[in-house]
Image (tube, rainbow, N blue to C red):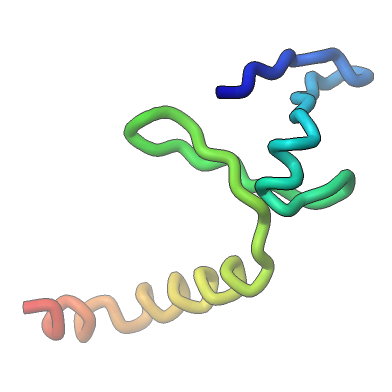
Length: 74
């Protein structure tokens, strides 16, 4: 378990992560992270542009073909 302290950065608040955590996540200063909420709390993961693009394409397709996808799911 790693405990990190929230610190004021200008008008915002930042989270500092130990270098071991950064190495484990394979991220570095300047990389983007994604904060998502799940049943157990929040999860922090590296941002993946390819995944974000695929998700956006799926969401556009899902709306367009909602009825067809519903029928296929039955």
